[in-house]
Length: 187
Image 1 (cartoon, one colour):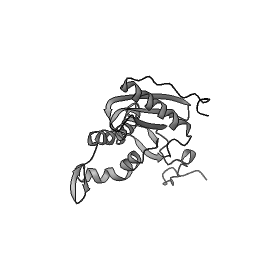
Image 2 (image 1 turned 180 degrees about the horizontal axis):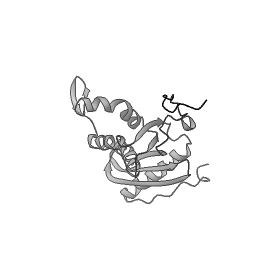
Image 3 (image 1 turned 90 degrees about the vertical axis):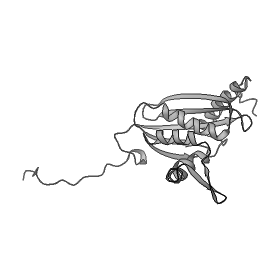
Image 4 (image 1 turned 180 degrees about the vertical axis):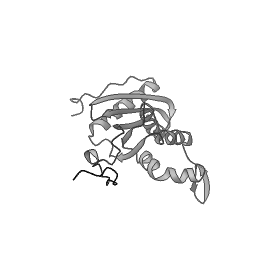
């Protein structure tokens, strides 16, 4: 019997690729980030690696400021990595900053609802680093982003590389040369 094209056809769910629940139409990238500060506050740096697993392509970015905090550099790493994307993308941000991961996924909705304020000791206070959080919020709205927290300085290769980029940028802002660690010297 021929198929009846007028009959409604059930929609078959498309299984997510590699266990991720992202739409198949969006490209997927991983964004590894880290921030560093020489003193807090002091000269600081940020670094990121953007990886497109399907093609294997990677790009790195880094920068810094002469007077900043570690949290500002952690936020800046994510902001700069997301800003490097040229179109709407599904992004897994891998960070060792619980401040960034929890702030983005748990705290930010409440801050926005309360006019970018938070409760502290019974009164309303402005959110610290508000301008950076607002910049991050705007970038998060352009992409589908999830955060994965990892322990820092625990041998995660991409996190270690981002740390090297961030420390080098912080040292440059401090006017000091940065020598990459030599594995033999680390033994």
